[in-house]
Length: 69
Image (cartoon, rainbow, N blue to C red; front, side):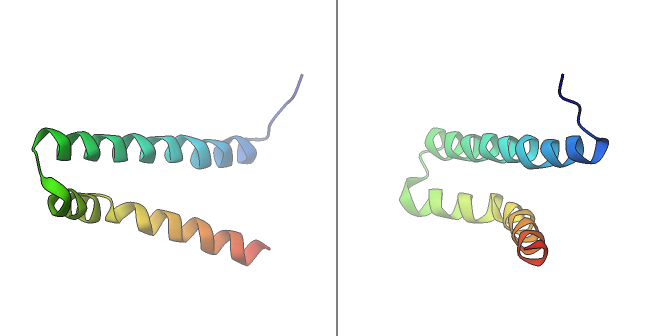
C-alpha cells in the first residue's frame, strides 16, 4: 500500500484539483460565449476578463517551479 504525507497530498490536490477546476471554468466561459452569441471578439474579451485570475495562479506555480529547480 502506498502512503502519502500530508504535504504530498496537499500538493497533489493543489496541482490536479485546482488545475481540473480551472479547465472546468474555461469550459463554462466557452459555454457562456456560445450561448450569448458573443462572436469572435466577444469570446476573446470574455476569456481575457474572466480567465485573467488564472494567470496569477499559473505564474505563481511557474515561479515556484523555477526557484526549486
